[in-house]
Image (tube, rainbow, N blue to C red; front, side, top):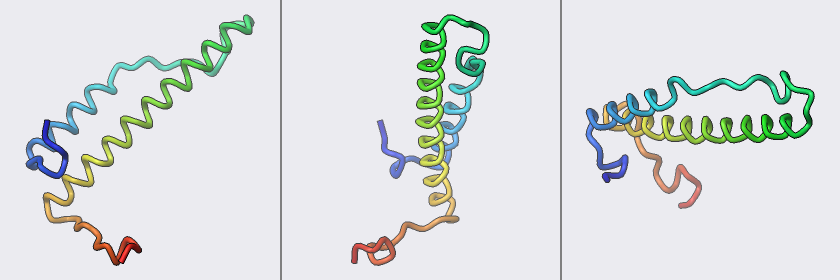
Length: 88
């Protein structure tokens, strides 16, 4: 599999579409324990909610990475130099 920095504009766009397709149709949970007075079900709902938030965060990080590389490929973004990163 190619790294993002080795992908063409078309490959990056396809990657964005795949990310969007992967996030469509995911269930939405009610706030933790909203429909149950059972404390164990409340704990499970909280864990499910945390897992979904972690997955959403991972997908958004990946999307931002792909969008950043796409902008660079299109000439809309340039990589920072070592000096600009504070390492030089």
